[in-house]
Image (cartoon, rainbow, N blue to C red; front, side, top):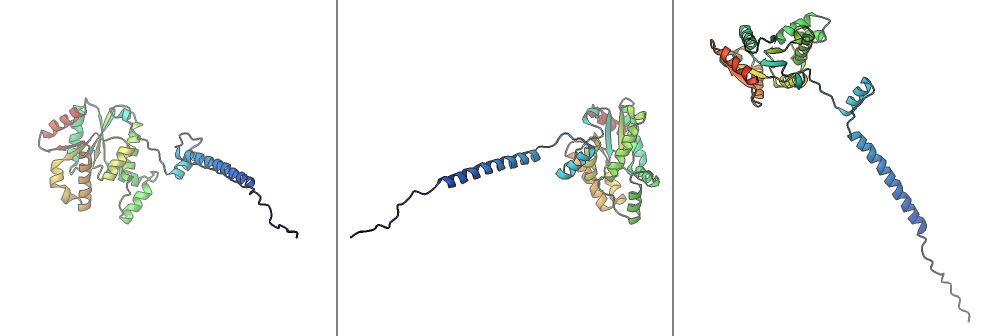
Length: 255
């Protein structure tokens, strides 16, 4: 009897093609990860040079970044100083303080900047950048956008610095400005540091609440608190010769 064995011989599995496939996939994944990682790193690194203003603007839009330049940098703080009076009931008091600053700071030039005057000048001159905006806001009785007053003040300071008087060391007195912490921060970011925030004690205690709305009065008091936190608030008692002595102390502290 012939017995036929139909069982086939068991062959070892062909692993070579599969291993080769896995090897290729590994290489491809590694190369892909390398280029993706490189691209991400490039995005993380801030760009520092630009071929054109348009390229810079596109970069700002794409990244949401914005370069900040102070009009008066730290190196010029000794040449141009700013004394803010967030609230003064009387023009006479501001003029007196300006005179005392000039007297006790070696006769340096003093420039009073009054935002109320700047607003009126801007509205009347149609060639000015914010003329129509201010007119529209007045007609609609809408509040000024944040930073608008600072922009007007900055323009005035820029103009002054391009005059002959602006070439000399100058003390700026900011009259009734800033009247909100937003404007205070904007000013110090875009223009210069404020040397001292001068608080007229009598005006704050006796006139502020009756002269301004509750919201505005609170906003002005917040400015006082803002500068108090950094030790740059100075309260002045408006009594006779006391103003002269107190301004002298402020100037001495700055030296």
